[in-house]
Image (cartoon, rainbow, N blue to C red; front, side):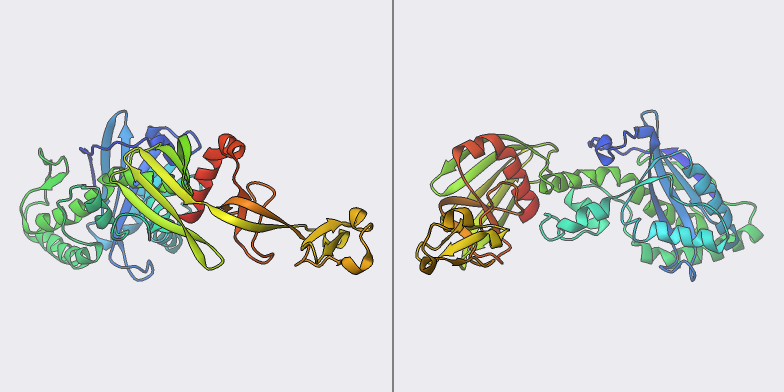
Amino acid sequence: MQIIETPIKSSFDYDLTLLSSNHVSNQEILFFDIETTGFSAAMSYVYLIGCAYFDQSTFILRQWFMEDIREEKELLTNFFEFLKSYRLLVHYNGSGFDIPYLLQKCSTYQLSYNFEHMISFDIYKQLIPYKKILPSKNLKLKTIEDFLKVERNDQYSGGDLIPIFTKFLALYTYEKKHTSGASHYQVSPVSGLPSIEKNDSGILRQLLLLHNAEDISNLPRILPMLSYVKLFEGNITLNKWDVTEMTVNFYFNINNQLHTSLTLESNYEVMDSLYPITLNASENEGRISIALFHGTLKFYFDNYKDYYYLPLEDTAVHKSVGEYVEKEYRQNAKPDTCYIKKTGYFLPQPYAMFTPSFRLERKQKQQFFEVTEQLLEQHSDKIASEIIRSYF
């Protein structure tokens, strides 16, 4: 087994403290990725585990590379012992593959290691809820890198490397028997990534190490994609609001700068009519515009047994008042008739943020609140954040 450790050049601009609310320092963060010969831990091998960490301000790449399948247990042991010094584990879809794979391997070898002491941060899981509205074509790691203009020298996928590793094992075993020694490692002065002398197995080793090294060293550099997540989560700072014609506009600052401008459209429905909601954002500024609904909506009382319904007035009144109405003009309210009506200007709300909460009909999920200048003055930041969070 080879252990390769070297400083790497990976410039990135993202506040790592945003990855966890548990006050984790940079020196407690570990970025990691694994390379295997298949998806099933029972039917394949993990031949390379790589990670990157901070030593003061220097970003260090560390890789455990298996040169013989009998070294798999040793590789696992070395990685998990190293892992004990860290609190936050950052990865890309590691929750779906890397972590379960390694845990199954530990079970196979009866190793007691686990990830229970770690805070797991899966970049992929952060992005997947917004897959349809993110500006990248898909959420493949290399697609995200291309979108953010993150450079990569490696041209292989993990699947492409499986036959390369198989060939490496055969060549390396042959070379050990028939040559004077194995490859000697250098550090490339250009990329800062591991470089190896050009013998047959060394070339293959370089391909395997390079793929893993770039997967890991690029993880911090794709973190700016999380700026879109923060926006869709409503993590904004409101500047001002205004009303133009039949639209309320909220102008805000984005707390993390976006890589590219963004325009998204959604809507809400009232009586088969669609009312647009538009989100525009660029760099660190944005605006959300929501069309107002002008009309009549209903507020439904929960305790309908305490009310009378007055058909002529099409409204409900409390029985303490309704008892003075002649019996032929009143009837016991039912859930569908226990309401009062309000005519005005309304905006949608995903839940009862503000009361009274109005509906078109009782069973309609869509709720509304009446728009007033006082409410906009006091709660415009909450309105903008919740509309973004709920409709995008």
